[in-house]
Amino acid sequence: MQQLNIAILSYRSAQFGGGQGVYVKDISYNLNQMGHKVDVISGPPYPNLDSRINLIKLPGLNLFETFSFKDRLYKFFKKKNKTLNDWYEFISVLFGGFPELKTFGDRANKFLIENNQYDIIIDNQSLSYGMLEIQKRFPLIEIIHHPITYDFKYELAASKKIKYKISRYRWYSFLKMQKKVAPKLKSIISPSKSSKNGIIQEFNCKEDTINIINNGLDANEFIPIKEIKKIPFRLITTASADVPLKGLDYSLKALEILKKEFPKIHLVVIGAPKKNGHTERLIKKLKIKEIITFKSNLTKREISEEYSKSSISIVSSLYEGFGYPVIEAMSCGTPLIATNISSIPELVGGYATLIDPKNYEALAGSIRKILSDYESFQEIAVRGREHVIKTFNWDKITKEYESIILKTIEDFKNADI
Image 1 (cartoon, rainbow, N blue to C red):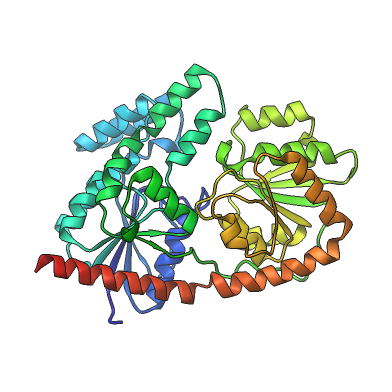
Image 2: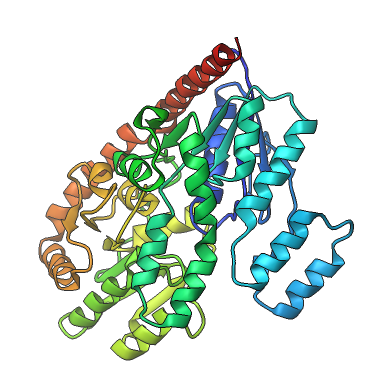
Protein backbone atom coordinates (compact mmCIF):
# COMPACT_ATOMS: atom_id res chain seq x y z
CA MET A 1 0.00 0.00 0.00
CA GLN A 2 1.20 3.53 -0.79
CA GLN A 3 2.09 5.86 2.05
CA LEU A 4 -1.00 7.49 3.53
CA ASN A 5 -1.35 10.65 5.60
CA ILE A 6 -3.37 9.51 8.62
CA ALA A 7 -4.88 11.56 11.45
CA ILE A 8 -5.87 9.79 14.67
CA LEU A 9 -8.26 11.76 16.86
CA SER A 10 -8.41 11.20 20.61
CA TYR A 11 -10.49 13.41 22.90
CA ARG A 12 -8.21 12.51 25.85
CA SER A 13 -5.17 10.25 25.92
CA ALA A 14 -3.98 9.77 29.51
CA GLN A 15 -0.82 7.69 29.53
CA PHE A 16 -1.83 5.56 32.51
CA GLY A 17 -5.58 6.07 33.06
CA GLY A 18 -7.52 3.36 31.23
CA GLY A 19 -6.74 2.12 27.73
CA GLN A 20 -7.18 5.31 25.71
CA GLY A 21 -3.59 6.51 25.79
CA VAL A 22 -2.23 2.97 25.41
CA TYR A 23 -4.35 2.31 22.33
CA VAL A 24 -3.48 5.63 20.68
CA LYS A 25 0.24 5.15 21.26
CA ASP A 26 0.21 1.57 19.95
CA ILE A 27 -1.94 2.08 16.85
CA SER A 28 -0.11 5.26 15.79
CA TYR A 29 3.29 3.59 16.19
CA ASN A 30 2.33 0.47 14.26
CA LEU A 31 0.69 2.32 11.38
CA ASN A 32 3.85 4.43 11.16
CA GLN A 33 5.93 1.24 11.11
CA MET A 34 3.93 0.16 8.04
CA GLY A 35 5.23 3.27 6.24
CA HIS A 36 2.40 5.76 6.85
CA LYS A 37 2.68 9.33 8.10
CA VAL A 38 0.65 9.57 11.30
CA ASP A 39 -0.49 12.61 13.27
CA VAL A 40 -2.25 12.20 16.61
CA ILE A 41 -4.66 15.04 17.31
CA SER A 42 -5.52 14.93 21.00
CA GLY A 43 -7.18 16.83 23.77
CA PRO A 44 -5.59 16.88 27.24
CA PRO A 45 -4.23 14.90 28.98
CA TYR A 46 -1.87 14.17 26.11
CA PRO A 47 -0.36 10.81 25.14
CA ASN A 48 3.24 9.71 25.34
CA LEU A 49 3.96 8.89 21.69
CA ASP A 50 6.86 7.46 19.77
CA SER A 51 9.23 10.21 18.63
CA ARG A 52 8.31 9.59 14.98
CA ILE A 53 4.64 10.45 15.59
CA ASN A 54 3.57 14.08 15.35
CA LEU A 55 1.37 15.18 18.27
CA ILE A 56 -1.05 18.02 17.56
CA LYS A 57 -2.57 19.41 20.75
CA LEU A 58 -6.15 20.66 20.80
CA PRO A 59 -6.32 22.13 24.29
CA GLY A 60 -9.62 22.29 26.07
CA LEU A 61 -9.95 23.57 29.62
CA ASN A 62 -8.85 20.19 31.06
CA LEU A 63 -11.16 20.74 34.02
CA PHE A 64 -10.89 17.13 35.20
CA GLU A 65 -7.26 17.70 36.10
CA THR A 66 -8.70 18.93 39.39
CA PHE A 67 -11.93 18.54 41.35
CA SER A 68 -11.52 21.85 43.16
CA PHE A 69 -14.14 24.43 42.15
CA LYS A 70 -11.65 27.21 42.87
CA ASP A 71 -9.04 25.62 40.56
CA ARG A 72 -11.61 25.06 37.83
CA LEU A 73 -12.78 28.65 38.08
CA TYR A 74 -9.16 29.82 37.78
CA LYS A 75 -8.62 27.64 34.69
CA PHE A 76 -11.72 29.08 33.05
CA PHE A 77 -10.97 32.75 33.70
CA LYS A 78 -7.29 32.29 32.84
CA LYS A 79 -8.24 31.12 29.32
CA LYS A 80 -7.95 33.97 26.83
CA ASN A 81 -10.26 34.39 23.82
CA LYS A 82 -12.85 32.03 25.23
CA THR A 83 -15.06 30.29 22.67
CA LEU A 84 -18.62 28.98 22.98
CA ASN A 85 -17.08 25.52 23.53
CA ASP A 86 -15.13 26.84 26.50
CA TRP A 87 -18.30 28.27 28.03
CA TYR A 88 -20.18 25.03 27.33
CA GLU A 89 -17.37 22.96 28.84
CA PHE A 90 -17.22 25.01 32.03
CA ILE A 91 -20.98 25.19 32.62
CA SER A 92 -21.50 21.48 31.85
CA VAL A 93 -18.76 20.43 34.28
CA LEU A 94 -20.16 22.85 36.86
CA PHE A 95 -23.43 20.90 36.75
CA GLY A 96 -21.78 17.46 36.82
CA GLY A 97 -21.53 16.68 33.12
CA PHE A 98 -18.74 15.29 30.94
CA PRO A 99 -18.56 17.61 27.90
CA GLU A 100 -15.09 16.74 26.57
CA LEU A 101 -16.41 14.41 23.86
CA LYS A 102 -18.59 17.07 22.27
CA THR A 103 -16.20 19.99 22.60
CA PHE A 104 -13.25 17.98 21.27
CA GLY A 105 -15.32 16.93 18.26
CA ASP A 106 -16.10 20.58 17.50
CA ARG A 107 -12.45 21.60 17.89
CA ALA A 108 -11.26 18.69 15.73
CA ASN A 109 -13.77 19.57 13.01
CA LYS A 110 -12.60 23.19 12.98
CA PHE A 111 -8.94 22.11 12.86
CA LEU A 112 -9.58 19.77 9.92
CA ILE A 113 -11.40 22.49 7.96
CA GLU A 114 -8.14 24.43 8.04
CA ASN A 115 -5.88 21.35 7.67
CA ASN A 116 -7.31 19.10 4.96
CA GLN A 117 -4.19 17.20 3.91
CA TYR A 118 -5.20 13.85 5.41
CA ASP A 119 -6.17 10.75 3.44
CA ILE A 120 -8.19 9.29 6.29
CA ILE A 121 -9.33 10.20 9.81
CA ILE A 122 -9.53 7.64 12.63
CA ASP A 123 -11.49 8.76 15.70
CA ASN A 124 -10.98 7.02 19.03
CA GLN A 125 -14.53 6.72 20.38
CA SER A 126 -15.63 10.33 20.79
CA LEU A 127 -18.81 9.62 18.79
CA SER A 128 -19.34 13.37 18.76
CA TYR A 129 -21.39 15.56 16.44
CA GLY A 130 -18.16 16.87 14.95
CA MET A 131 -17.44 13.43 13.48
CA LEU A 132 -20.54 13.65 11.29
CA GLU A 133 -19.24 16.92 9.83
CA ILE A 134 -15.76 15.46 9.33
CA GLN A 135 -17.28 12.37 7.65
CA LYS A 136 -18.74 14.64 4.94
CA ARG A 137 -15.25 15.79 3.89
CA PHE A 138 -12.94 12.87 4.73
CA PRO A 139 -13.01 9.08 4.82
CA LEU A 140 -13.64 8.42 8.53
CA ILE A 141 -13.25 5.32 10.71
CA GLU A 142 -14.75 5.37 14.20
CA ILE A 143 -13.18 3.14 16.85
CA ILE A 144 -15.77 1.93 19.38
CA HIS A 145 -14.11 -0.19 22.05
CA HIS A 146 -17.47 -0.83 23.69
CA PRO A 147 -20.75 1.05 24.18
CA ILE A 148 -20.44 3.28 27.25
CA THR A 149 -24.11 2.54 27.94
CA TYR A 150 -22.85 -0.56 29.78
CA ASP A 151 -20.77 1.58 32.16
CA PHE A 152 -23.85 3.72 32.81
CA LYS A 153 -26.08 0.73 33.58
CA TYR A 154 -23.61 -0.88 35.98
CA GLU A 155 -22.97 2.40 37.78
CA LEU A 156 -26.71 2.98 38.22
CA ALA A 157 -27.03 -0.49 39.73
CA ALA A 158 -24.13 0.12 42.12
CA SER A 159 -26.10 2.33 44.50
CA LYS A 160 -29.71 2.99 45.50
CA LYS A 161 -29.02 6.55 46.62
CA ILE A 162 -31.07 9.08 44.66
CA LYS A 163 -28.33 11.74 44.72
CA TYR A 164 -25.84 9.24 43.26
CA LYS A 165 -28.26 8.17 40.51
CA ILE A 166 -28.95 11.80 39.54
CA SER A 167 -25.20 12.43 39.33
CA ARG A 168 -24.80 9.42 37.02
CA TYR A 169 -27.58 10.59 34.71
CA ARG A 170 -25.91 13.98 34.51
CA TRP A 171 -22.41 12.58 33.89
CA TYR A 172 -23.57 10.20 31.15
CA SER A 173 -25.74 12.80 29.41
CA PHE A 174 -23.29 12.58 26.47
CA LEU A 175 -24.83 9.20 25.61
CA LYS A 176 -27.74 11.00 24.00
CA MET A 177 -25.27 12.46 21.49
CA GLN A 178 -23.48 9.15 20.94
CA LYS A 179 -26.74 7.32 20.26
CA LYS A 180 -27.59 9.90 17.57
CA VAL A 181 -24.15 9.88 15.98
CA ALA A 182 -23.29 6.16 15.95
CA PRO A 183 -26.00 4.96 13.51
CA LYS A 184 -24.92 7.61 10.97
CA LEU A 185 -21.27 6.52 10.90
CA LYS A 186 -20.28 4.61 7.77
CA SER A 187 -17.21 2.72 9.00
CA ILE A 188 -16.69 1.39 12.55
CA ILE A 189 -13.97 -0.85 14.01
CA SER A 190 -14.76 -2.88 17.11
CA PRO A 191 -12.19 -5.04 18.99
CA SER A 192 -14.40 -8.10 19.65
CA LYS A 193 -17.57 -9.95 18.58
CA SER A 194 -19.10 -9.16 21.94
CA SER A 195 -18.45 -5.45 21.52
CA LYS A 196 -19.85 -5.52 17.97
CA ASN A 197 -23.07 -7.10 19.23
CA GLY A 198 -23.28 -4.46 21.95
CA ILE A 199 -22.81 -1.64 19.42
CA ILE A 200 -25.64 -3.02 17.29
CA GLN A 201 -27.97 -3.41 20.27
CA GLU A 202 -27.12 -0.27 22.25
CA PHE A 203 -26.39 2.19 19.43
CA ASN A 204 -28.69 0.78 16.73
CA CYS A 205 -25.84 0.53 14.21
CA LYS A 206 -26.05 -1.54 11.06
CA GLU A 207 -24.07 -4.78 11.23
CA ASP A 208 -22.39 -4.24 7.85
CA THR A 209 -20.82 -0.96 9.03
CA ILE A 210 -18.85 -2.70 11.82
CA ASN A 211 -15.59 -4.57 11.31
CA ILE A 212 -13.96 -6.61 14.07
CA ILE A 213 -10.23 -6.12 14.59
CA ASN A 214 -8.70 -7.12 17.91
CA ASN A 215 -6.51 -4.68 19.78
CA GLY A 216 -2.87 -5.66 19.70
CA LEU A 217 -0.23 -6.28 22.31
CA ASP A 218 3.55 -6.21 22.10
CA ALA A 219 4.55 -9.54 23.64
CA ASN A 220 8.15 -8.31 23.73
CA GLU A 221 7.07 -5.67 26.26
CA PHE A 222 4.69 -7.80 28.32
CA ILE A 223 6.99 -10.71 29.11
CA PRO A 224 7.66 -13.21 31.87
CA ILE A 225 10.80 -11.80 33.48
CA LYS A 226 12.81 -14.91 34.25
CA GLU A 227 15.13 -13.33 36.83
CA ILE A 228 12.11 -12.42 38.96
CA LYS A 229 10.80 -15.22 41.15
CA LYS A 230 7.09 -15.54 41.70
CA ILE A 231 5.93 -14.77 45.22
CA PRO A 232 3.72 -17.57 46.58
CA PHE A 233 0.15 -16.52 47.41
CA ARG A 234 0.57 -13.16 45.65
CA LEU A 235 -2.46 -12.21 43.55
CA ILE A 236 -2.75 -9.35 41.07
CA THR A 237 -5.66 -7.53 39.43
CA THR A 238 -6.29 -4.32 37.51
CA ALA A 239 -9.11 -1.95 38.38
CA SER A 240 -9.86 1.68 37.52
CA ALA A 241 -10.72 3.83 40.53
CA ASP A 242 -14.03 2.66 42.01
CA VAL A 243 -15.50 1.67 38.63
CA PRO A 244 -18.25 -0.93 39.29
CA LEU A 245 -17.77 -2.44 35.81
CA LYS A 246 -14.36 -3.80 36.83
CA GLY A 247 -15.85 -5.96 39.60
CA LEU A 248 -13.10 -5.29 42.13
CA ASP A 249 -15.58 -5.84 44.97
CA TYR A 250 -15.70 -9.56 44.18
CA SER A 251 -11.92 -9.96 44.22
CA LEU A 252 -11.87 -8.25 47.61
CA LYS A 253 -14.60 -10.51 48.97
CA ALA A 254 -12.77 -13.60 47.70
CA LEU A 255 -9.63 -12.37 49.44
CA GLU A 256 -11.55 -12.02 52.70
CA ILE A 257 -12.65 -15.68 52.41
CA LEU A 258 -9.09 -16.91 51.81
CA LYS A 259 -7.10 -14.83 54.31
CA LYS A 260 -7.47 -17.30 57.22
CA GLU A 261 -6.69 -20.37 55.07
CA PHE A 262 -3.66 -18.70 53.45
CA PRO A 263 -2.09 -16.27 55.98
CA LYS A 264 0.50 -15.08 53.43
CA ILE A 265 -2.04 -14.23 50.73
CA HIS A 266 -1.73 -10.71 49.31
CA LEU A 267 -3.45 -8.78 46.52
CA VAL A 268 -1.78 -6.15 44.35
CA VAL A 269 -4.20 -3.84 42.53
CA ILE A 270 -2.91 -1.96 39.50
CA GLY A 271 -4.94 1.22 39.93
CA ALA A 272 -5.85 3.66 42.64
CA PRO A 273 -8.98 3.90 44.79
CA LYS A 274 -10.85 7.14 45.32
CA LYS A 275 -10.02 8.67 48.67
CA ASN A 276 -12.79 7.76 51.13
CA GLY A 277 -14.64 6.12 48.26
CA HIS A 278 -16.57 2.85 47.99
CA THR A 279 -13.48 0.63 47.60
CA GLU A 280 -11.72 2.05 50.67
CA ARG A 281 -14.89 1.62 52.70
CA LEU A 282 -15.31 -2.00 51.58
CA ILE A 283 -11.67 -2.84 52.38
CA LYS A 284 -12.16 -1.42 55.87
CA LYS A 285 -15.40 -3.39 56.33
CA LEU A 286 -13.76 -6.66 55.21
CA LYS A 287 -10.69 -5.96 57.42
CA ILE A 288 -8.21 -6.73 54.63
CA LYS A 289 -6.30 -3.43 54.39
CA GLU A 290 -3.02 -5.04 55.50
CA ILE A 291 -3.06 -7.57 52.65
CA ILE A 292 -3.77 -5.17 49.76
CA THR A 293 -1.39 -2.88 47.89
CA PHE A 294 -2.44 -0.36 45.24
CA LYS A 295 0.04 0.66 42.53
CA SER A 296 -0.69 3.20 39.81
CA ASN A 297 1.01 5.09 36.97
CA LEU A 298 3.15 2.09 36.06
CA THR A 299 5.11 1.70 32.84
CA LYS A 300 4.67 -1.42 30.72
CA ARG A 301 7.96 -2.74 32.09
CA GLU A 302 6.80 -2.15 35.66
CA ILE A 303 3.48 -3.89 34.93
CA SER A 304 5.39 -6.89 33.55
CA GLU A 305 7.47 -6.96 36.73
CA GLU A 306 4.32 -7.01 38.86
CA TYR A 307 2.83 -9.88 36.86
CA SER A 308 6.12 -11.77 36.99
CA LYS A 309 6.14 -11.52 40.79
CA SER A 310 2.54 -12.70 41.07
CA SER A 311 1.30 -16.27 41.28
CA ILE A 312 -2.23 -15.66 39.99
CA SER A 313 -3.86 -12.89 37.97
CA ILE A 314 -7.55 -12.03 38.38
CA VAL A 315 -9.92 -10.23 36.02
CA SER A 316 -13.26 -10.03 37.82
CA SER A 317 -14.89 -7.58 35.39
CA LEU A 318 -18.62 -7.45 34.84
CA TYR A 319 -18.06 -6.34 31.24
CA GLU A 320 -15.08 -5.92 28.91
CA GLY A 321 -15.36 -4.68 25.33
CA PHE A 322 -11.72 -5.76 25.04
CA GLY A 323 -9.87 -6.66 28.21
CA TYR A 324 -6.27 -5.47 28.02
CA PRO A 325 -5.54 -6.89 31.50
CA VAL A 326 -6.58 -10.34 30.19
CA ILE A 327 -3.99 -10.48 27.42
CA GLU A 328 -1.36 -8.61 29.45
CA ALA A 329 -1.53 -11.23 32.19
CA MET A 330 -1.46 -14.06 29.65
CA SER A 331 1.47 -12.51 27.79
CA CYS A 332 3.39 -12.37 31.07
CA GLY A 333 2.77 -16.09 31.62
CA THR A 334 0.75 -15.66 34.81
CA PRO A 335 -2.07 -18.16 35.51
CA LEU A 336 -5.32 -16.30 34.96
CA ILE A 337 -8.78 -16.44 36.50
CA ALA A 338 -11.36 -14.35 34.63
CA THR A 339 -15.10 -13.90 34.35
CA ASN A 340 -16.84 -15.69 31.50
CA ILE A 341 -18.58 -12.58 30.16
CA SER A 342 -18.55 -10.38 27.04
CA SER A 343 -15.23 -10.49 25.15
CA ILE A 344 -13.20 -12.44 27.71
CA PRO A 345 -13.93 -16.00 26.47
CA GLU A 346 -12.98 -14.78 22.95
CA LEU A 347 -9.64 -13.51 24.19
CA VAL A 348 -8.43 -16.32 26.45
CA GLY A 349 -8.82 -19.14 23.92
CA GLY A 350 -9.25 -21.77 26.65
CA TYR A 351 -6.03 -20.84 28.47
CA ALA A 352 -7.63 -19.39 31.61
CA THR A 353 -9.96 -20.47 34.39
CA LEU A 354 -13.35 -18.88 33.76
CA ILE A 355 -15.94 -18.18 36.45
CA ASP A 356 -19.34 -16.51 36.57
CA PRO A 357 -19.27 -12.76 37.28
CA LYS A 358 -20.05 -11.61 40.85
CA ASN A 359 -19.43 -15.14 42.20
CA TYR A 360 -16.69 -14.39 44.72
CA GLU A 361 -17.05 -17.85 46.28
CA ALA A 362 -16.26 -19.45 42.90
CA LEU A 363 -13.33 -17.04 42.57
CA ALA A 364 -12.01 -18.08 45.98
CA GLY A 365 -12.42 -21.74 45.00
CA SER A 366 -10.51 -21.24 41.75
CA ILE A 367 -7.66 -19.49 43.58
CA ARG A 368 -7.54 -22.39 46.03
CA LYS A 369 -7.49 -24.91 43.16
CA ILE A 370 -4.62 -23.20 41.33
CA LEU A 371 -2.54 -22.88 44.48
CA SER A 372 -3.01 -26.61 45.18
CA ASP A 373 -1.77 -27.68 41.72
CA TYR A 374 0.34 -24.74 40.63
CA GLU A 375 2.67 -26.47 38.15
CA SER A 376 -0.24 -27.67 36.00
CA PHE A 377 -1.74 -24.20 35.77
CA GLN A 378 1.67 -22.65 35.09
CA GLU A 379 1.97 -24.96 32.06
CA ILE A 380 -1.40 -23.70 30.81
CA ALA A 381 -0.17 -20.12 31.31
CA VAL A 382 2.89 -20.83 29.13
CA ARG A 383 0.60 -22.00 26.31
CA GLY A 384 -1.56 -18.94 26.95
CA ARG A 385 1.38 -16.67 26.19
CA GLU A 386 1.91 -18.51 22.88
CA HIS A 387 -1.78 -17.91 22.09
CA VAL A 388 -1.37 -14.16 22.72
CA ILE A 389 1.74 -13.97 20.53
CA LYS A 390 -0.08 -15.67 17.67
CA THR A 391 -3.43 -13.91 17.96
CA PHE A 392 -2.76 -10.35 19.12
CA ASN A 393 0.50 -9.43 17.40
CA TRP A 394 0.57 -5.97 15.87
CA ASP A 395 1.94 -7.06 12.48
CA LYS A 396 -1.20 -9.13 11.81
CA ILE A 397 -3.55 -6.52 13.28
CA THR A 398 -2.03 -3.53 11.45
CA LYS A 399 -2.48 -5.32 8.12
CA GLU A 400 -6.15 -5.80 9.00
CA TYR A 401 -6.36 -2.06 9.74
CA GLU A 402 -4.77 -1.25 6.38
CA SER A 403 -7.40 -3.36 4.63
CA ILE A 404 -10.29 -1.47 6.30
CA ILE A 405 -8.56 1.88 5.72
CA LEU A 406 -8.24 1.17 2.00
CA LYS A 407 -11.88 0.06 1.72
CA THR A 408 -13.08 3.15 3.61
CA ILE A 409 -11.12 5.44 1.26
CA GLU A 410 -12.47 3.63 -1.84
CA ASP A 411 -16.06 3.79 -0.55
CA PHE A 412 -15.66 7.51 0.14
CA LYS A 413 -14.35 8.20 -3.37
CA ASN A 414 -17.11 6.15 -4.98
CA ALA A 415 -19.73 7.97 -2.92
CA ASP A 416 -18.43 11.28 -4.32
CA ILE A 417 -18.79 10.16 -7.92
